Length: 174
Image (cartoon, rainbow, N blue to C red):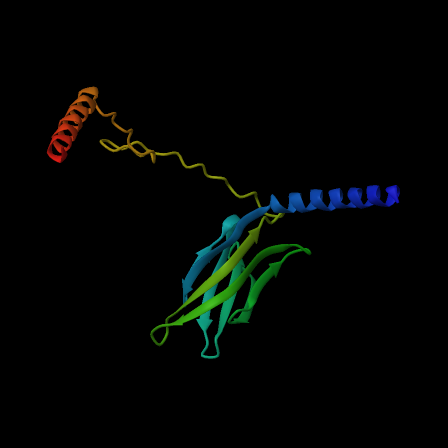
C-alpha cells in the first residue's frame, strides 16, 4: 500500500513538472482582440492573423501568415475555434466570440479567448520592459498624496470651543 502511494506521488510530481514548463511558453494567455473585415492583427514571432471576410451564415474566413507566407486559411463558424498546430504543438488558438454587423462590406469580429504559444522554430519573442517617464510638472506615481497632519493649535481651538459650547448647554438646562 505504501509503495502505491509513493508511486502515485512520483507520477503526480512528474506531471506537475511538465505542466509547469508548458506554462512558461505562453505568449498570449486568454486575451481578446477585434478585427474589421480586411484588417489584420500582428502577433508575436512574426505571425499575422487576417480577417478576409464575414458571411451572412455567421462564419468568418481567417488566414494566418508567418513571414509573408500563408500557413493556414480556414472558415470558422461563430463560437468556433481557429487552431494552428505545428509539429504536434499548438502555436495559436482563438475563438470567434461574436460577429457585429456593420455596413455592406464591413463587419467587426471579436476573438476571445486568444492563446499564443512560442514557436520553437522561430526566434524567441522580445520582452520589452516599460520604464515610467517623468514629465515636467507631473508626478507619474500612483500613490495618493501624503495626508497633511492637523496642526496642534487647531486641535486646541476645537477643544476649547467644544468645552464652551458644553458649558453653555449645561447652564441652559439647569
